[in-house]
Image (tube, rainbow over all chains, first blue to last red; front, side, top):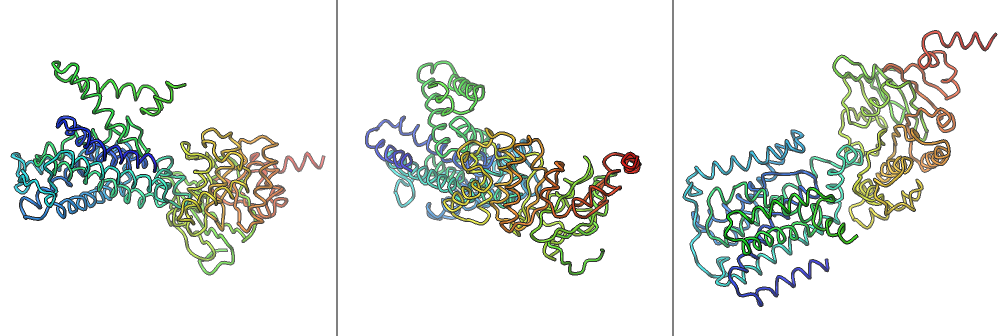
Length: 309
Length: 255
């Protein structure tokens, strides 16, 4: 809990000290990724159900937030809330189909990927989403519209959302659901024998997980004010959402934030140093990933512990 | 005894058959477990004991037959529902939550009856005390010895506060001194009000602990009775040592 408050304090101070738009942009984007990744972490990190399709939730949160404002003239805040709710519902629906049929491991990953891709194709073709041209939220910089003239203000908002997600994760970790979830990850049969309703635990978790990642999508829409199918439902966000926790420490409260900040800092740094070589940031990304996977325990905190010894 | 009428037995298995394709693992098995008893289930390897356990605990649906707990039909109920009703099992091949500590492992069981983390952890400590794991609470489960893992299996099951505990070979793989240590633990569990049905190969422990024993061979219950009756029964001797063995042994004893 102290670490979470420290994190909140840092996020609160940064906009007062940093004025560079590039830096603030980077931080807001990293916070959005961290939030999406925290969603993945609940299901994948704590529950051991590796989704490769969290774009389905991110995109649903983003699109509904945008569509309700642009097509139905709703205020941004209820639109954002509705986006989170629909993302949660989509999570429950995909979970019901996948977990009821007993899909696990790579089969579950493939099915979630397939759902995200179907959504992407549909969003690219549908009228309501603006099709391939995408959807633009009108620029009206007013806190009443969930739009802010200062990037620093948005960093506060995004940082607050991440703080709430961290607190929710910590609460989950200490709850009965959290204990049962970890038990399901470690050994399903043993969990069942101890009275854990495995299906119910998985469904509750995927719903929470989808809501959190959906919130990240809604934030994205409000910050960038533009969406198309490849942004909202693109594979990039599914990958970001799982990479950050895996690098930072899956099944830990701070793993996703740590991973998101580290990965994007490294990518940003390499771009600055060797910016003339195209794709060099992705190379750095790849090297970090290889290091993390090569040396167990397979995350950054684990690596640090090894090196200290 | 056949039929589905009210049954005085605490746990009653009535004509249970379980087929896997062409293989009949359990064939028309019927047995009773009296409330407050330690009842043994023995039989040669491959007799179907673990399958019968899986059917009782809801991990497998029987092809035919009924399972009754305190007269209530529980056939085909899912494992977590049965755990809630007070039926707990351990696994022959231990299934620890390897990444968790001993305390966290047991707490998963305790969370069945407790909603708060503090209460579940406290309950886990009390259970650890009962099975002799109190000094290993903070160890990762993966670091336990075989005997420790067996105790952990029992502890987790106990933490669900069962009425009926199914123990699947908790003594297998232990050395004689470890067995001597764990036998009183099992007796204490029963004395604490938990009915125990145990699969066991260690006959010395079966003779010591059990009031009644059922013998399963090739999927059938071939003999039921007190431990002394059962080991003396020709059908049981033949199930273990082959056809005609009882006669030959008798002949050797008479000669």
